[in-house]
Amino acid sequence: MQPGASEVLNGVKQIIFNVLLPELQTEQARQQAMYATLLLVHVAARWDIEGPLLLEERAELRALMTQALSVLGEAGGLAPRLREGLEAAQATTAGPRALDAENERMRSLVPALAREVWGTKDERLLELDAAVRAYARNQHRRDQKIVEVGGLAW
Amino acid sequence: MDRERLREYLAARLPSAEDIVITRLERTGGGASRETWLVDAEWTENGTRAARPLIIRRDPTASVLETDRHIEFEVLRAARQIPVPVPQMYWLEEGGGWLERPFMVMERVSGVAPPVVFPITESDEVRGTIAEEFAIYLARIHRADWHKLGLEILGVPTSGETAARTQVEWWEREYQRSKLEERPVLAIALHWLATHLPKRSEIVLVHADYRAGNFLYENGHITALLDWEMVHLGDPMEDLAWAVLPFWSSGGLCQGLQLRDDMVAAYERAGGMPVDAERLFFYEVLGAVKMAVISLTGVKSFCEGRNCETVLALVGFMVPRLEADLIEKLQI
Image (cartoon, rainbow over all chains, first blue to last red; front, side):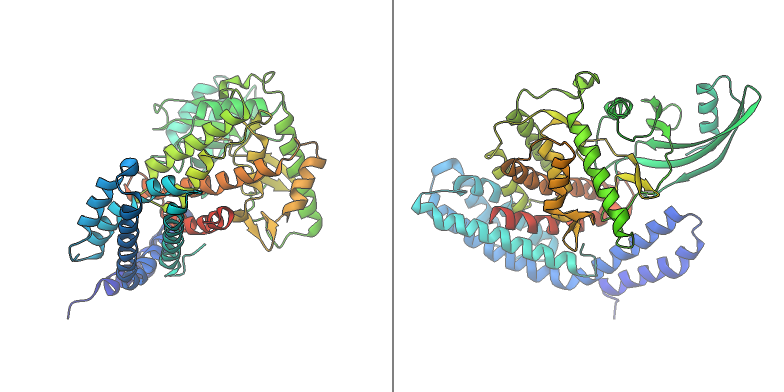
C-alpha cells in the first residue's frame, strides 16, 4: 500500500529532525528547521479534519445564501452574486481544495451581507443579521479547530 | 550579510578610521518586519583603538509590514529629545548598493527584550518599576511637542475622526491585500470600525507598537524603546489600547506587567492624556484587527515565497485568538 499524506509528512519531519537539524551551524538555521517540523506536524494532523469542516461550512453558507436571497430579493444588488455562489456549490466536489475554493466564493459575499444587515432595526432583516453572526461565530470555531491540531494554537 | 562589504561600508562612513575589523556579525531572531543584525566593529581613530557595538536593521525580502524606513529613522532621532530612551541613530542607507537591501545603522543599547509577556520569573519589584517606566515613557511620547520636533513629516490628521479613519482605512487596505481567504469576523469588525469612528481627540505622537517585546531592559530599568516603524500622529488612546490588548495578557496582567485598570491608571498618573473609555474601546477593537492583519501579512509573504522565515507561517495561527476577542467585544 502507498503511504498516505500523513505518513509522508511524518517521514519528512523525521528527516529534518534527525538528519538535517544536527548538521545546521547557526541558531537561525536551527530555529527555521524546528519551526518547519512544527508546521509539518500541524499539516499531518490537519489532514483528517479539514474535509468534514469544509463540508459543514458549505452547508451553512448555502443555507445563509438561500436565506439572504429570500429576504433581500433584488435589494442592494447582491442577488446575482448570491445566485452565482449557490450555483457553484451545487456540484459534488471532489477534494478539500476544490471545496475550499467553492466555499470561498460564497464566503467572500459575507462581508457585503453583514454591511446590509449589521445593527439593523428592520424586523425583516433581524433573522438574517442573526444568521450572519452565527455563521461568523461558527466559522471562527472551525478555524480554531484547525489551528489547534498539531499543538500550534497560541 | 557580506562581512567584507560591511567593513567597506564602515570605512566609507568613517574616513578617519583605520584598520576596521568586524569581530561579530550575527543575525538575531527578533524583528519580523526588518532583519536585525548584531555587529561588533573595532577600528583605530587618532591612534586609539575603539570598539563599537552596533545594530543593523536591514529590509527583508518581504515583511509582516511594509513601512517607511526614512520616517522611522527621523522619528528615532527626534525621540531622543522628548526625552525617551532610544538608540542613537548613525546612518540610513536607502539603496541596496552596500548590503543588497536598504538598512539603518544604530547604537546597540545594552539590555534584553522581554517576550510579549514580561517574564513571570522577574521579581515584583522589577515588574513594578518597569510598569511605571512603561507608563511614564508613553505619557512623554504623547505629551511631546511634535511640531517642535519637526514631525509633521508623519502627516497631520485634521481631527480625531480623521486620525481614526486613516487607521481604519489603512488596516482595511492591508487586510484586503494580505488575506488568503475571507475572514468574516475581521470583515465585520472592520465594518464596525468604519461606522463607529470617534469624533474628537488630541493629536499626539503615537508609537503604534508600544508593548513588552519592543523595549529593552537591564538592572530593572527600561534602557531603550524600539520598533517605531508604525509611528504616526493620531489618538493617544491607540497606544494605550494596544498596551492593554488581551492578546498580550497573561494571568490577568497586561503584557505580564499590570492589571488593565492599573495600567490605565499608571498612564494617567504619569501625565498621559485624559483617558476616554469609548475611544479606548474603539482602539482596542482596532488593535485586535491590526494584530490579526499583521499576522496575515506575514503568512501571505511566506505562502508566496517572498520570505522564507517559517515563523511568519506560524503567526497566522494567532488570528483565531484575536478574532475570539472581537466576537466577544462586538457581540458577533
